[in-house]
Length: 289
Ligand code: SAM
Image 1 (cartoon, rainbow, N blue to C red):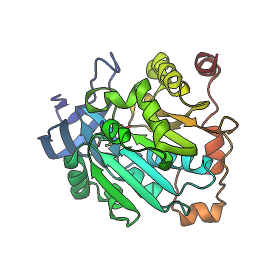
Image 2: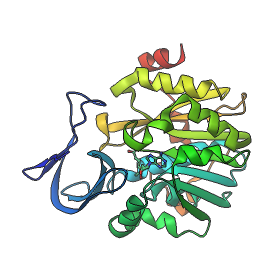
Image 3: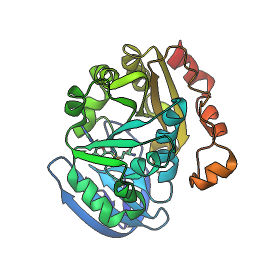
Image 4: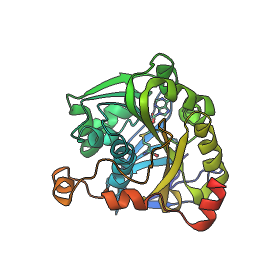
């Protein structure tokens, strides 16, 4: 975990990505502490701006975070005809909240994040993301997402799980029974979207998580986006719909270029939405056969 050496931070994680490591040159260590749940570091990097690192794993950098935050938010929101009430699980940096509250149909956003220290430190060091917490549409609860879900039934139109990787406090958010709880917490026709890992790193794990989702949701798909500071330079999302006839590739809400500019979207467009579901042949065969 002491991965900063000679001004370089290296993301070494032998369980999740053995034998490879992405490195960033660090200008300054801004903060480091051990919270009740995890080791938290904030660093100023030479070329990726500020970076949040939890348990030695990069969560976001100010240079490329919008790709992840916009896609995990707008893919499910634009698949739903009227996403009025949304739940975010995790997302302690505030970036997903920042995006979700922009959607014109969203009236109410609830968020459950396990670690209040991630929220507080993001407000101090990552204000461009943590501005999401300032919206009066948002109600933040500090607690475990898995437990929270047990007490909420038939309540949300869309649930977004912006969790850290399946190690540490986020393990339960990748389990099959979590998808059962998500299903119960959704209203009819509801949609879920979860951080789903990279097909380059572990396509079997992506498939296993999709299968877990598929036990509860009649429609499941995997979409990807490009995030250079994540392992292998990209990340996927697992999207489930309670509507068996839903075509997740086709957004029901399409923003025109003027609306995209007004919403200050830098990555997401309706074309990118559809393209995100187009997968290399070997991945498509692996995940869907
Ligand atoms: N974009 C990031 C990624 O994919 O690496 C995730 C960013 S966000 C900082 C992840 C958040 O999930 C963290 O703030 C962490 O504290 C939170 N988290 C982890 N396990 C959780 C749980 N069981 N319930 C609620 N929040 C959780």
